[in-house]
Image (cartoon, rainbow, N blue to C red; front, side, top):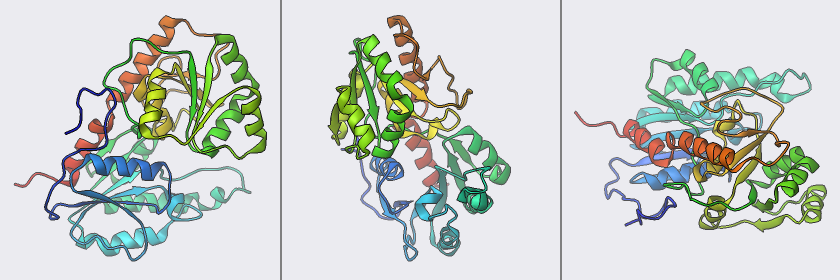
Length: 342
């Protein structure tokens, strides 16, 4: 049995079913990344669920299927017509079929960008996948609202992304003067580049110890920057070690636009641990129940925040997260995948 008194949510020890009659298959892009981590966490939470990397000859006969959609994971240009064809061929043999739309389509006004030429195809495929489903889920309101125009007659959920590196049952009474940058190497490189010298100046003025968590940064310019500023580089860590660092940290930094940060597992992990997110983006606005100065800091603040202000934002971020913790997310999705028998 999992230790229910442990402040870190455990992904192990969850109950499973003996029968394969109600098996759930999570179909994902056949590549490592946030979608894979998210699906594995969901499958471990649910009973008798498995994660399958997509391939054109994949068979899921008799299973309840949740397709995790991120177009670029299935196709170079994010328009996987072959995925839509796979769904149409296999759906008659599925017990239940739902779609989790991690990403629907991209938009660009630059004629030199490939997105400019394919976004309509991306949008068509996303809409068709939703219409083929028996229920659909999105992690941001702007995609959720668009999908409602396409398949709003079907059961649907809005579910921002939960943390895949643990979550706390309550906020710690004391935090340390730590700032964390967490995520894949490309995401962290973008974050360090967006923060630049201003981030290090603020950290120094506020007495913050800086921690970098994830695969080693190979960008020579950023790697040199981290070393010159004394950043503590942890490399890849276990889920337990990451969670332990986050629960003591005051701030977590990520470069992400506020209009789609609800789909960021990095942002979700900061909120799940009560580390005040620092969001680096030229974009502004309030989305998905999040507002600058309430649940997160927009950009690098001009000076250290007061303890009362930090505590207020930490609580606000943590409270926002509770509506889509791993339990709050997986239980209603499992109910859709396993509807009660009449």
